[in-house]
Image (cartoon, rainbow, N blue to C red; front, side):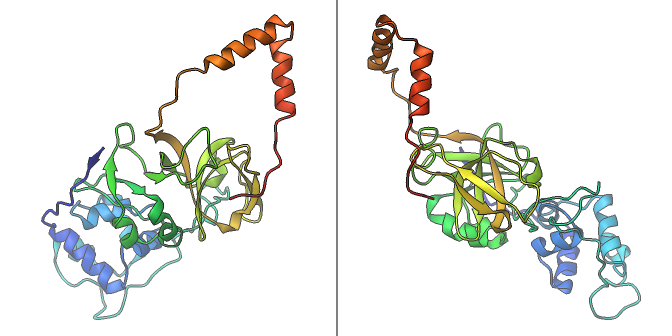
Length: 299
Protein backbone atom coordinates (compact mmCIF):
# COMPACT_ATOMS: atom_id res chain seq x y z
CA UNK A 1 0.00 0.00 0.00
CA UNK A 2 1.28 3.43 -0.94
CA UNK A 3 1.11 6.20 1.66
CA UNK A 4 -0.57 9.30 0.22
CA UNK A 5 1.16 12.68 0.12
CA UNK A 6 -0.39 15.88 1.43
CA UNK A 7 0.27 18.14 -1.55
CA UNK A 8 -1.65 21.42 -1.54
CA UNK A 9 -2.59 23.05 -4.81
CA UNK A 10 -3.39 26.72 -5.38
CA UNK A 11 -7.04 27.35 -4.61
CA UNK A 12 -9.40 28.83 -7.22
CA UNK A 13 -11.24 32.11 -6.53
CA UNK A 14 -14.56 30.25 -6.25
CA UNK A 15 -13.06 27.94 -3.62
CA UNK A 16 -11.84 30.95 -1.65
CA UNK A 17 -15.32 32.51 -1.78
CA UNK A 18 -16.98 29.24 -0.67
CA UNK A 19 -14.63 29.24 2.33
CA UNK A 20 -15.53 32.90 3.00
CA UNK A 21 -19.23 31.97 2.88
CA UNK A 22 -18.76 29.12 5.35
CA UNK A 23 -16.73 31.38 7.65
CA UNK A 24 -19.48 34.00 7.49
CA UNK A 25 -22.12 31.39 8.39
CA UNK A 26 -19.94 29.84 11.09
CA UNK A 27 -19.78 26.49 9.25
CA UNK A 28 -17.09 23.96 8.41
CA UNK A 29 -17.21 21.18 5.82
CA UNK A 30 -18.93 18.79 8.25
CA UNK A 31 -21.65 21.17 9.50
CA UNK A 32 -22.25 22.56 5.99
CA UNK A 33 -22.66 19.00 4.70
CA UNK A 34 -25.33 18.35 7.30
CA UNK A 35 -27.07 21.65 6.53
CA UNK A 36 -27.20 20.82 2.81
CA UNK A 37 -28.51 17.30 3.44
CA UNK A 38 -25.55 15.48 1.88
CA UNK A 39 -24.60 12.01 3.14
CA UNK A 40 -20.82 12.52 3.16
CA UNK A 41 -18.44 15.46 3.29
CA UNK A 42 -16.58 14.41 0.13
CA UNK A 43 -18.37 16.90 -2.17
CA UNK A 44 -17.58 19.93 -0.01
CA UNK A 45 -14.05 18.74 0.76
CA UNK A 46 -13.37 18.54 -2.97
CA UNK A 47 -14.60 22.11 -3.43
CA UNK A 48 -12.57 23.41 -0.48
CA UNK A 49 -9.49 21.72 -1.91
CA UNK A 50 -9.82 23.42 -5.28
CA UNK A 51 -12.53 21.72 -7.37
CA UNK A 52 -15.13 23.96 -9.05
CA UNK A 53 -18.66 23.41 -7.67
CA UNK A 54 -21.07 21.81 -10.15
CA UNK A 55 -24.35 23.42 -11.24
CA UNK A 56 -26.46 21.10 -8.98
CA UNK A 57 -24.24 22.10 -6.04
CA UNK A 58 -24.74 25.80 -6.81
CA UNK A 59 -28.49 25.18 -6.93
CA UNK A 60 -28.28 23.48 -3.51
CA UNK A 61 -26.40 26.51 -2.14
CA UNK A 62 -29.03 28.88 -3.53
CA UNK A 63 -31.96 26.90 -2.11
CA UNK A 64 -30.35 26.55 1.28
CA UNK A 65 -29.18 30.17 1.51
CA UNK A 66 -31.60 32.16 -0.73
CA UNK A 67 -29.94 35.47 0.14
CA UNK A 68 -26.59 34.28 -1.25
CA UNK A 69 -25.57 36.13 -4.42
CA UNK A 70 -24.44 33.68 -7.12
CA UNK A 71 -22.92 36.64 -8.98
CA UNK A 72 -20.60 37.05 -6.04
CA UNK A 73 -19.97 33.32 -5.54
CA UNK A 74 -19.28 32.45 -9.19
CA UNK A 75 -18.04 35.74 -10.70
CA UNK A 76 -16.77 37.62 -7.68
CA UNK A 77 -19.11 40.56 -8.45
CA UNK A 78 -21.12 42.49 -5.86
CA UNK A 79 -21.62 41.53 -2.22
CA UNK A 80 -21.99 38.09 -0.68
CA UNK A 81 -25.64 38.55 0.34
CA UNK A 82 -28.35 40.09 -1.77
CA UNK A 83 -30.14 43.03 -0.17
CA UNK A 84 -28.33 42.64 3.16
CA UNK A 85 -25.30 44.42 4.61
CA UNK A 86 -24.75 42.02 7.45
CA UNK A 87 -25.99 38.94 9.23
CA UNK A 88 -26.13 35.36 8.12
CA UNK A 89 -28.27 34.24 5.21
CA UNK A 90 -31.64 32.75 6.07
CA UNK A 91 -31.68 29.00 6.51
CA UNK A 92 -34.35 26.46 5.70
CA UNK A 93 -35.39 23.06 7.02
CA UNK A 94 -34.38 21.29 3.82
CA UNK A 95 -31.63 19.21 5.40
CA UNK A 96 -32.72 15.66 6.20
CA UNK A 97 -31.21 13.76 9.08
CA UNK A 98 -30.27 10.15 8.58
CA UNK A 99 -32.82 9.20 11.26
CA UNK A 100 -35.75 10.66 9.29
CA UNK A 101 -37.59 9.57 6.17
CA UNK A 102 -35.82 9.04 2.85
CA UNK A 103 -36.93 10.52 -0.47
CA UNK A 104 -39.06 7.44 -1.15
CA UNK A 105 -40.85 7.68 2.18
CA UNK A 106 -39.11 4.62 3.62
CA UNK A 107 -37.41 5.14 6.98
CA UNK A 108 -33.63 5.31 6.77
CA UNK A 109 -32.08 3.76 9.85
CA UNK A 110 -28.63 5.04 10.81
CA UNK A 111 -26.85 7.14 13.41
CA UNK A 112 -28.06 10.42 11.92
CA UNK A 113 -24.57 11.92 11.70
CA UNK A 114 -22.49 13.14 8.78
CA UNK A 115 -19.58 10.90 7.82
CA UNK A 116 -16.24 12.73 8.09
CA UNK A 117 -13.81 11.75 5.32
CA UNK A 118 -10.54 12.87 3.73
CA UNK A 119 -9.71 13.25 0.04
CA UNK A 120 -6.44 13.28 -1.90
CA UNK A 121 -5.11 16.16 -4.04
CA UNK A 122 -7.34 15.01 -6.93
CA UNK A 123 -10.49 15.02 -4.83
CA UNK A 124 -10.74 11.23 -4.52
CA UNK A 125 -11.81 9.63 -1.24
CA UNK A 126 -8.96 8.22 0.84
CA UNK A 127 -9.02 4.90 2.67
CA UNK A 128 -8.21 5.76 6.28
CA UNK A 129 -6.77 3.19 8.70
CA UNK A 130 -7.97 3.07 12.31
CA UNK A 131 -5.19 1.24 14.20
CA UNK A 132 -5.85 -0.41 17.55
CA UNK A 133 -4.34 2.44 19.57
CA UNK A 134 -6.69 4.98 17.91
CA UNK A 135 -9.94 3.03 18.28
CA UNK A 136 -10.87 4.40 21.70
CA UNK A 137 -10.55 7.92 20.29
CA UNK A 138 -12.40 6.93 17.10
CA UNK A 139 -15.42 5.78 19.13
CA UNK A 140 -15.82 9.32 20.45
CA UNK A 141 -14.43 11.46 17.59
CA UNK A 142 -15.26 9.45 14.44
CA UNK A 143 -17.34 12.28 12.95
CA UNK A 144 -14.79 15.02 13.66
CA UNK A 145 -12.83 16.00 10.56
CA UNK A 146 -9.73 17.00 12.56
CA UNK A 147 -9.48 13.53 14.12
CA UNK A 148 -10.09 11.68 10.84
CA UNK A 149 -7.49 13.84 9.07
CA UNK A 150 -4.82 12.55 11.46
CA UNK A 151 -5.49 8.88 10.61
CA UNK A 152 -3.05 7.11 8.27
CA UNK A 153 -4.27 7.10 4.65
CA UNK A 154 -3.60 4.50 1.97
CA UNK A 155 -4.50 3.48 -1.56
CA UNK A 156 -5.52 -0.20 -1.89
CA UNK A 157 -6.18 -1.85 -5.28
CA UNK A 158 -9.85 -2.72 -5.68
CA UNK A 159 -10.94 -0.19 -3.04
CA UNK A 160 -10.58 3.05 -5.00
CA UNK A 161 -14.24 3.89 -5.70
CA UNK A 162 -16.60 4.39 -2.78
CA UNK A 163 -16.19 5.17 0.89
CA UNK A 164 -13.91 2.64 2.53
CA UNK A 165 -12.13 2.53 5.87
CA UNK A 166 -9.71 0.01 7.37
CA UNK A 167 -9.70 -1.19 10.98
CA UNK A 168 -7.01 -3.18 12.77
CA UNK A 169 -8.41 -6.28 14.49
CA UNK A 170 -7.99 -6.42 18.27
CA UNK A 171 -8.31 -9.62 20.28
CA UNK A 172 -9.41 -13.16 19.44
CA UNK A 173 -13.21 -12.87 19.24
CA UNK A 174 -13.26 -13.54 15.47
CA UNK A 175 -10.78 -16.41 15.44
CA UNK A 176 -10.28 -18.61 13.50
CA UNK A 177 -11.64 -16.39 10.70
CA UNK A 178 -9.54 -13.35 11.59
CA UNK A 179 -6.58 -12.94 13.91
CA UNK A 180 -5.26 -10.24 16.21
CA UNK A 181 -3.67 -7.37 14.22
CA UNK A 182 -5.22 -8.41 10.89
CA UNK A 183 -6.66 -5.44 9.01
CA UNK A 184 -10.25 -5.50 7.70
CA UNK A 185 -11.20 -3.33 4.70
CA UNK A 186 -14.76 -2.06 5.03
CA UNK A 187 -17.40 -0.10 3.13
CA UNK A 188 -19.64 2.43 4.89
CA UNK A 189 -23.23 1.34 5.55
CA UNK A 190 -25.38 4.46 5.24
CA UNK A 191 -28.73 2.68 5.72
CA UNK A 192 -28.65 -0.07 8.34
CA UNK A 193 -31.82 -1.58 6.87
CA UNK A 194 -29.67 -2.74 3.95
CA UNK A 195 -27.10 -4.74 5.92
CA UNK A 196 -26.53 -8.31 4.70
CA UNK A 197 -27.46 -10.85 7.41
CA UNK A 198 -24.60 -13.09 8.59
CA UNK A 199 -21.91 -10.79 7.17
CA UNK A 200 -19.13 -9.34 9.30
CA UNK A 201 -19.33 -5.68 10.40
CA UNK A 202 -17.27 -3.18 12.31
CA UNK A 203 -19.70 -1.87 14.93
CA UNK A 204 -18.97 1.59 16.34
CA UNK A 205 -20.58 2.91 19.51
CA UNK A 206 -19.60 5.84 21.73
CA UNK A 207 -17.84 3.31 23.97
CA UNK A 208 -15.98 0.99 21.61
CA UNK A 209 -15.12 -0.28 18.14
CA UNK A 210 -15.98 -3.98 17.67
CA UNK A 211 -15.74 -6.53 14.89
CA UNK A 212 -18.81 -8.79 14.95
CA UNK A 213 -21.13 -10.84 12.78
CA UNK A 214 -24.75 -9.62 12.51
CA UNK A 215 -27.36 -12.20 11.56
CA UNK A 216 -30.56 -10.16 11.33
CA UNK A 217 -31.56 -6.90 9.68
CA UNK A 218 -31.93 -3.67 11.62
CA UNK A 219 -35.37 -2.17 11.06
CA UNK A 220 -35.67 0.61 13.63
CA UNK A 221 -33.75 2.47 16.32
CA UNK A 222 -35.85 1.11 19.19
CA UNK A 223 -34.79 -2.52 18.67
CA UNK A 224 -31.83 -4.63 19.73
CA UNK A 225 -29.22 -6.26 17.50
CA UNK A 226 -27.44 -9.48 18.47
CA UNK A 227 -23.67 -9.40 17.93
CA UNK A 228 -21.96 -12.73 17.22
CA UNK A 229 -18.31 -13.78 17.42
CA UNK A 230 -16.72 -16.52 15.31
CA UNK A 231 -14.85 -17.72 18.38
CA UNK A 232 -16.94 -20.51 19.90
CA UNK A 233 -15.89 -19.39 23.40
CA UNK A 234 -17.53 -15.98 23.00
CA UNK A 235 -21.27 -15.78 23.61
CA UNK A 236 -23.40 -13.50 21.41
CA UNK A 237 -24.78 -10.48 23.21
CA UNK A 238 -27.45 -7.85 22.49
CA UNK A 239 -26.82 -4.18 21.81
CA UNK A 240 -29.41 -1.40 21.64
CA UNK A 241 -29.55 -0.08 18.07
CA UNK A 242 -29.83 3.43 19.51
CA UNK A 243 -26.28 3.00 20.86
CA UNK A 244 -24.84 2.42 17.37
CA UNK A 245 -23.13 5.35 15.68
CA UNK A 246 -21.53 3.71 12.60
CA UNK A 247 -21.61 0.39 10.74
CA UNK A 248 -18.92 -0.73 8.28
CA UNK A 249 -19.34 -3.90 6.22
CA UNK A 250 -16.19 -6.03 5.91
CA UNK A 251 -15.24 -6.44 2.23
CA UNK A 252 -11.77 -7.94 2.56
CA UNK A 253 -8.80 -8.21 4.87
CA UNK A 254 -5.00 -8.05 5.03
CA UNK A 255 -3.11 -10.54 7.14
CA UNK A 256 0.43 -11.67 7.90
CA UNK A 257 -0.99 -14.98 9.13
CA UNK A 258 -0.59 -17.83 6.66
CA UNK A 259 -2.53 -21.05 7.33
CA UNK A 260 -0.41 -24.12 7.81
CA UNK A 261 -0.53 -27.17 5.57
CA UNK A 262 -3.52 -29.52 6.03
CA UNK A 263 -3.28 -31.53 9.24
CA UNK A 264 -2.28 -35.05 8.20
CA UNK A 265 -3.28 -36.37 11.62
CA UNK A 266 -6.89 -35.24 11.16
CA UNK A 267 -7.07 -36.79 7.69
CA UNK A 268 -5.70 -40.08 9.04
CA UNK A 269 -8.23 -40.00 11.90
CA UNK A 270 -11.13 -39.78 9.41
CA UNK A 271 -9.73 -42.77 7.54
CA UNK A 272 -9.69 -44.79 10.77
CA UNK A 273 -13.28 -43.73 11.62
CA UNK A 274 -14.47 -44.90 8.20
CA UNK A 275 -12.47 -48.11 8.48
CA UNK A 276 -14.30 -48.87 11.75
CA UNK A 277 -17.60 -48.62 9.91
CA UNK A 278 -18.79 -45.26 11.25
CA UNK A 279 -20.54 -42.82 8.95
CA UNK A 280 -18.54 -39.60 8.61
CA UNK A 281 -21.70 -37.47 8.35
CA UNK A 282 -23.15 -38.95 11.53
CA UNK A 283 -19.87 -38.32 13.38
CA UNK A 284 -19.83 -34.69 12.22
CA UNK A 285 -23.42 -34.16 13.36
CA UNK A 286 -22.60 -35.66 16.76
CA UNK A 287 -19.61 -33.33 17.14
CA UNK A 288 -21.66 -30.27 16.14
CA UNK A 289 -24.50 -31.12 18.54
CA UNK A 290 -22.11 -31.59 21.44
CA UNK A 291 -19.82 -28.63 20.71
CA UNK A 292 -19.19 -26.40 23.76
CA UNK A 293 -21.24 -23.20 23.62
CA UNK A 294 -21.34 -22.11 27.25
CA UNK A 295 -18.76 -19.42 27.93
CA UNK A 296 -18.49 -16.14 29.84
CA UNK A 297 -20.09 -13.13 28.17
CA UNK A 298 -17.02 -11.56 26.59
CA UNK A 299 -17.02 -8.46 24.43
